[in-house]
Length: 392
Image (cartoon, rainbow, N blue to C red):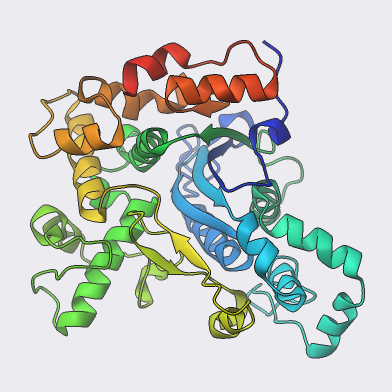
């Protein structure tokens, strides 16, 4: 089978969800504890998360899930060409200059461009049009993400050369069944690697930030730590019983990112019935929304037809089975969730544990994968047999 170009997998002209991942050169532990030398570079995982949050405010790409590991990273992203087409030229310039600034402060953070600099950039409409296209491009976001991390790590190690093994690889997620399975696969990475025992201790994944966000909103609403968790916008009304005890046992050592009001505010919500305002750089969300066409409401929509509570319960239970090394019987409360998502409960453990090994260019129900193959001129794509087994 001929190898597809990344541009054949990612259609930048329409909204789509993609699993993107990359490894460090020679599979070295460049963001963790080196098993040979014992050198600990785990703090670099925070670099990845901080950079991802910065780019979530600049690019028109929704961050749905992530996991940062010692030798690689996983991202689930959704491109938003619909938003790119709606924003003003001035917002295009501000966003681009947040990703590629004229100047940075002493901490390396981008400095907002002056009015004069913005007028100069606006004087070249062809360049602004190209920036508009790039702002909703997953390829450009991945490039901007990798460049800064690689340069910072090489400076830290006082070396030159490649940090990542390649640009990045990606798989198109064609339906909610594929998105759910891939999200679970990504969120369980630290547990499979024996770096965490449960989602609430998976500190370098998006599910940890979602759980911190649940606690932060609960404490803000109650005014006192330790009270019952109220419902959240995603409908997670009973997370106290499921996850809060484990989170509170962690005590100190939280990510710096979690010290702000809503640790997960920059992530897309989980439930597709929930939407959040779109982000903007330099704290200009209000100006960004006011500058859009009348009646146009830019939102970051959730990805799954289930609530946050249901998804977290599913991942929490699955993670505990992974930790003990055996597949238990799917609880009666979870079986209907899997059925609603189009996932066969008898294959759930295998699907959530082997997703990236099963699928290469595209994942989803068999008919969707066949449609993709026809569109790109392939007779067959890897994972068709597994798709028929895993997805209803």
